[in-house]
Length: 143
Image 1 (cartoon, rainbow, N blue to C red):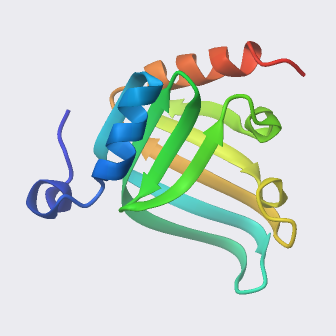
Image 2: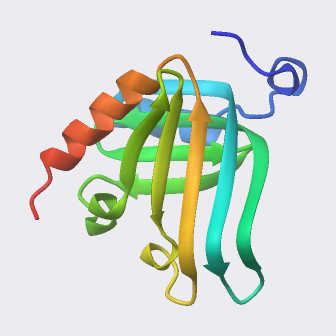
């Protein structure tokens, strides 16, 4: 799997050492680092930002452990949801093609003072495996 240039040169889009230890102790199932990602805001409102439609590109990392889903934008955590957390059921997973995983959700799911929709896309050859694993984890969660 080809990594982004800034990942190869500077390690941007790498899972930090702190999270690497936590991920390994939780039982890593899948991970991808140095992959392309986008965030799309749709009819989005927060105290600091308003966007009817806005897209940003970044270098990402994605990991699934036995207990949670983690996603990183450059080095910042953008998704950290345990499977036992009720909010995990509010995430919508889909594939846009065989290499593009889409994670979409209502912005109010994580922030009470936000509204609209947020879509994260991750371009990785492992998109199908991530999709299968995450949808299986959702099916196994009690309602």
